[in-house]
Each structure stands twice: as structure tokens, then as C-alpha cells.
Length: 278
View (cartoon, rainbow, N blue to C red):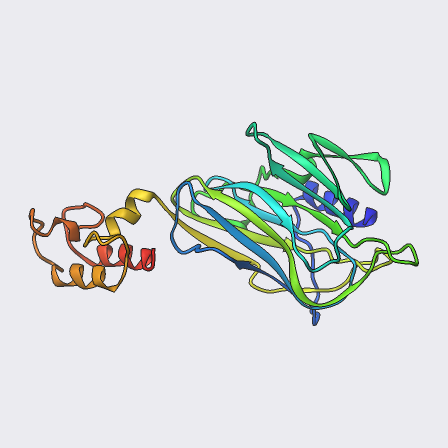
């Protein structure tokens, strides 16, 4: 993992993209909570999934996310690699500041920096694992995007040959948690996965569904979308607004003016559609 580490940090400094060639191994981002209408103050979780992995003994994902709309909370290691290996990730501490967490087997240490297990003279600081991007690459840009870089590192425990155990197949590499802090579209992008084998040599992989958009909203907007007040945004709310479509707003039908702009029109239907099921 040491070579992977320095390759990752070089990428962070250069603000470049990790190149992935075509491979049968596919890595993707998969949301595990609703990202179609996540309210301010709610948390969303995103899995990093792997399919058809072959000989995987470690990984070092590099991601970019819109820090103007999403606050990074932390990451948990998936069950793909056997327990007992190395896990390094940034996390939000109880005091509201970030720290680096290092887990080896059952032992966990945290701080503003930690020593890299294979080379104690090498320190990993929070700035190495989580940092702002001073210039956003064009391919990442969404409206009002302010992006930060996020990296984590993981490897299998050592086997009888003193090399990390390798794994084949499908599974979850890691789960990321973010909190919605502003109501606007927010992007999360997997720039590279940096898979390695038992000899710390890189493995080829293909990124699919590597960019997802969290369509955030505020709690007030979700409440307004429940126009009939039954506690759920569903087809009945759409029917209610459709029945008032184009009418002047009055005291009797003002609930149908979801965005409170003085009109009952397609924009109100769109807002309800974005909250269906909530």
C-alpha cells in the first residue's frame, strides 16, 4: 500500500484524474439513501461497489464532492476485504473538526495526523486525506459547485506468506456519509479507485456510474409539497394540484401554490414530483 499511498497523494496535489483502463473489474458509486430530495440537515450514504474483482488486496479511492452543499461526516469500511487489515480515513470529530482515523485489526487511533503503518516515519495528516480544490476541473462543475477532495486507504490482513490476502468477486468497498447543508444540486465524483494486488502492484478497473447528483432541498419545501396535509407526499398531492392547475390563488386553493409564487402551474407539480414518497 505504500506505493499506492504516494501515488494517491501525488494525484491530490496535482488535482488530476486517476486513469482507469477497460477491465472486467467494475467500480461504481451507489446511493443507499434517497438522493432525489434530501432535506437540509439530513444525511445521505453512498456505497463504493466493486463487481468482478480479481486478486484485490487493497484500494485507495479518490473522490471529489460539492462541499458547498454537502458536509463530509465519515466513511466505514465495507465487508469486501477480510477484517483485520489496514483502514485509514478522515472523519468529523465530536468537536466539529476533522481527524484521521487509523485502524489495524482491533486497534484504532485518531488524531490530526497518524503514522503510516508500513513506514512509521511517514505521517498522514487530515490535509492529506481531505482538502479543498482551489480550481475545480470543468468536468466536475455543477451550479455553484465548491469541491473538496477525499481519500481513504484500505488493505487486507497479511496471510501466511506475509502478503495481504487477495479477494475475488463482488461487494462493497466502503460507505461514505454526508450531511446536506444547502439546498442545491450537489455532485459526488469517484475520480479513481487505485486497486492493488498482494504485491502492491496496481490492478486495472473500469469506473461506471462514477458521478452522482444529490438533489437537495430544504425541509420547508418538503412540507409544502404535502399539499393535502396527510404526512406523505404522494399521487394524491399531484391530483390535488392538477385539479387547481391554472386557477387564481385563493384562500381555498393556496396549498396548491407549492412554491408560493402566486401561481398554480407546472413548477408546483415538479416540486411535488421531487418529493414523492417522502
